[in-house]
Length: 306
Image (cartoon, rainbow, N blue to C red; front, top):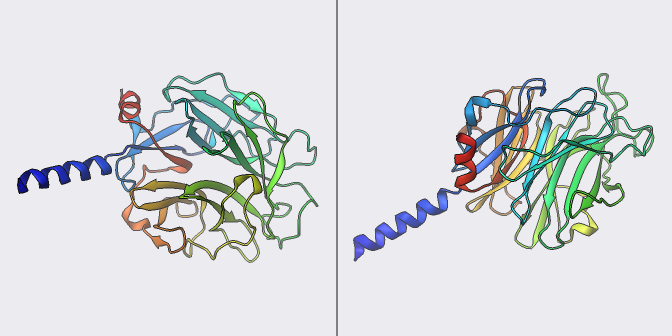
C-alpha cells in the first residue's frame, strides 16, 4: 500500500510538471516570421523544427514579424497580434485553430486616426475571462501629447504611452484610448491574472538617466485600468524588453529579452511582490527575441513537431 501511495504521488507530480508551454518569438530582423519554442518546466525552451517559420509576415511597408503575442480564446482559437514596422500606425492580426494554418493577415488600423503618431509597437493580447473581452495594448508616441521625459541623444522624440482597444470577436473594436499614462515613457505592457487580481508588467523606457527595466502594478478591475504608481524594478542591472508572464506551478515567471547582451532572462515570484532572478537557470533557442509564453495541449505541441 505504501508503494502504491508513493507511485500515485509520483504520477501526480509528473502530471503537474508536464503541462506543455509554447513561446512565440522572432529572430534577427524579424522578416523570416513566427517561430516557436516549447517547454514542460518553464526553464528549458527548445526550438520547434529548428526555428522554422510558421507564418511569414505580409503587412506594412517593412513586412516585419516583431513581438508576436498569442493568446487562446475560450473556443480554442489562437489569436496573434504583432508589430508590423518601426513607424506603422497599424497592428498585424491573424488567427489559427492549430498554430500551423493561419487566416489571412489583417491590418488593424488602431492609430491611423492620429496623423502625428510615430509608432505602434509591441501589441499584447489578454483574454479576460470575467468580461469575455480581449484587450489589445500597445505603445505609441504622439509628439507633445504626454508629460515630458528627459531625452538621450539617440532617443530624441520618443515618449511612449500605452494605448488599447477591446474586442469580443476581432471584427468590431472599441475606440482606441489611452490605457496607462504614468510620468515615464512606457512600453511592452503585459497582463496576467493572479488570483482575483491582475498584474501589469511594464517596461520603464526612460532614456536619461536610462531605466530600461521592468516594473509591476496591480488592479482588481481591468475596465478601470492600472494605478500609475509602479513597483521598484523587478529586473537587475541590465537592459531588458518584452516581458512575458507565465504561471508555472506555484510561480509566476516573467521572461524578458536582455537585448544588449543577446540573451534571455527571467524572474519569478509566488505573489508578485518578492522576485527572484533565475536568469542563470533558463535556456532559450539562440537568437530568441521578444515574444510571449502561453500554455497549450500536448496535441498542439505534437502537431507542430510533425
